[in-house]
Length: 441
Image: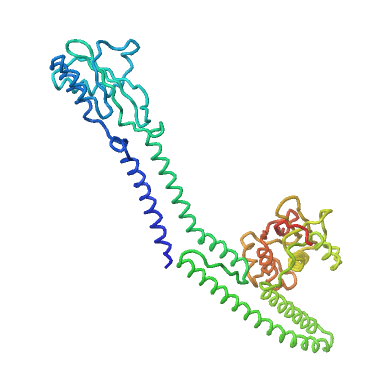
């Protein structure tokens, strides 16, 4: 049985805390000789040293060796010396421990005793530091204790706290990696859903991860199929309607052509042509989502030259680079984008200007005109299907309202973008950014 996503995350966090606690316990209790001393703090050591000094003062000289031998255990060595070592600097001591011993002596009625504590360095096993403690006696001389410091415990010469922190960081990193691994299917799902938004055609997403994620991915795949089926049905319906309308429009056009020349005859012919254009654009709009796959690249400069030669319209002015400008779009889709944009520019302006900036990536195609332009607040709405600005840009019929919609869908499907701006010539400037591609073939 597969564990759910929530259960997996809870287990990962719990195991991380358990591992940290386990490591801490392992270092705390340890093994062997070190296990009995690891982590032992010496809060009673100052009292023991004070008591030892007072006992040495009280017992006869012949009993002192036995007393010192009884104290010399568990990392401590005690002896009596007549004077302090010559190389001992009284000004450099461990003040915290010295004050604790003096306080313990004062509580036992032995004020004013000289106490010195020095750090001699790490022990031979590397588990701590050696301390030298000197306590003055009442009749002269000093009790010298060579004590192993159990507070600063070391492993391989390094304080044990460093290893605890290091292991904690390693465990935390391992937990993060495990969580990231469990969240990877969610990231992949988000990326695949973005692809679904760019292309109506179904994109099969592999079912991976926890059961909840697999169920969600399965639902997304089924939703894609249903959406694709709806769009296909719409396309078939529009295609059938378009075919029937073409037949009736052709008959109507023939009958209108047989009418005598008049103002009404010319108007009827214009209406029939507008209806034919609307039918063709509507069918193209419905079918462009399921257009057949084309070669992955095309030369936009060559496509513009080819379009200019076919139209043979002197109002189209080209400013193109000498070499090719390859973009990640097929010839058919690229030709449709150019035809729609240049057609709009020539419809609403006296001339159309086309230029290409192929110096970087993406490649930028700019189509400008000298018409009235589009108000800034309407530039996003003109990409909506059947939206027209007849009040500001209509000279003849204003088009069908699908040209820019088709352009944006084609461009965005190929990873590009379309931007409307004001041209320095006074009209509209359309900037189409398309990803650069390698030459076809």
